Image 1 (tube, helix red, strand yellow):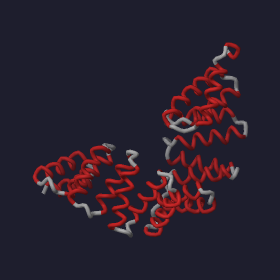
Image 2 (spheres, rainbow, N blue to C red):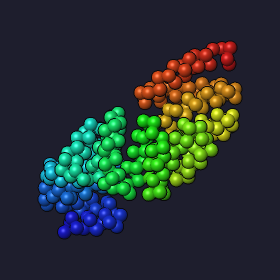
Image 3 (cartoon, rainbow, N blue to C red):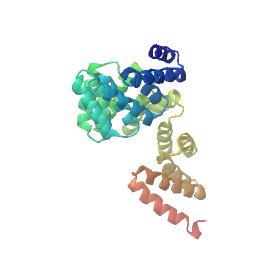
Image 4 (cartoon, rainbow, N blue to C red):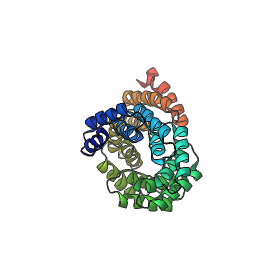
Length: 293
């Protein structure tokens, strides 16, 4: 009875009451694997990933040959950056259900994060064949095509993703990147603006718009886009560096130094940007010289 009530509350969007009934179900029967899985789903959806993983693991222990539970566990691990652990679960799920598109999609994303680009393409290609209306799979496949220089194929996948899910901003952002790489700046601006329209909290299109405006010498617009990206995502390193460069150009040296410093701090945490870190370090030293003040 409590399990059915939990499902009813969950359908109504009352996750607090749903969780209470799932927990009551598990008090009466600790091996109720469906209640474990559904409780894990609530924790996952509400961002309590560690707790979700515990519940999903218990569901898997109760039903080790159920691919859905392994996929759910893999999704939670992937969201926490535990890519190897996620890959193991997706692999197991794909063995249990070779025609499961979600398992193939998970494998593709995990392989991509681990740098196994060709294997990622293989798995995502399987995912879109098994589930042709999966917009996220098309977008992910397009991103990998773009990474390997197959730009026409990338655009095709992004366009398909955008058609399948008109509310998804990522295909527009990714199309913008391809157009920018081809110096088709008008098209790139259009796609970046569309991504922002769909998701105003999306920092990366703002950063890339800033780069394009800088190419055309529209520095005030460029600076505004970098500042927007930083407001949206203060931990995103790239706009700090680009903003500092533009600020130097317009003579705002103290503000430029502050942004170089912020970039160094953020980029160190990100573990990338070696070239930019070297430039930022040198510029900071020069801007701190008395003659520059």
